[in-house]
Image (cartoon, rainbow, N blue to C red):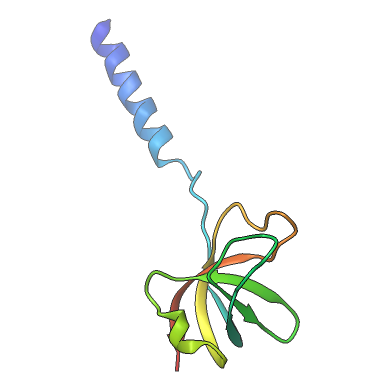
Length: 99
């Protein structure tokens, strides 16, 4: 009896761990002007990306955005979950710059 409960518990654990409760995010490709964020009311993101129709707060651990300030670039980024907040823009993590 105890073995049956253990086996059932194990399979339940495996099924629960492999369920599709992961949030799948697809990468975004956006082109715009990269600028330092400066003082903002929403206080997230080191920089902003200004596209033709929208502004995004951006950050990166891989790309030195400071070197790209004042330039128009195409970025590959992913959304950071839990944003926007405080009326701010969407928050993106820049994964790479396309040249």
